[in-house]
Amino acid sequence: MSAMGPASLDAGARCPCGRGEAYASCCGPLHDGAPAPTAERLMRSRYSAFALGLERYLLDSWHPSTRPAAMDLDPEVTWRRLLIEGTEAGGPFDREGFVTFTAIARTPAGRFEQRERSRFLRDPGDRWRYVDGAEG
Image (cartoon, rainbow, N blue to C red):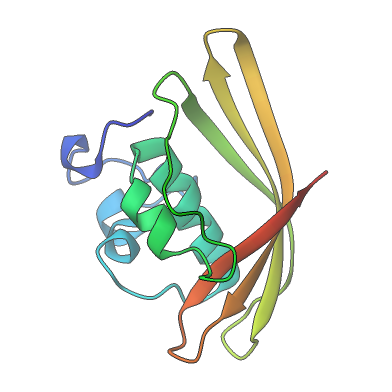
């Protein structure tokens, strides 16, 4: 699912985030501007954005204090699966949250795994934003 874009997904296609729901009722609304209710949902929507090549969404959902000026997604990386290993805070009444995950991808060199403990903050407008992460 590398850089294929949501327009190429069928209306009932499963969301890349792995929740088992249709993209149109899962990460699709977040990609269209709806706020994520929890840090985990933002994490899942960001994974889906990587899988679908949605660079603008990735930048928009990044906290301004750590956001890069631009992104250049590698079209040779095909994201296959997201495993959420744990969450700490990040709920509807929290201001900070952490999500530990493993994202599995395929590259021309073979299987690739990215493990990270990501930190999220909710801004004054009640939108969760990705701040940073530590590999692990």
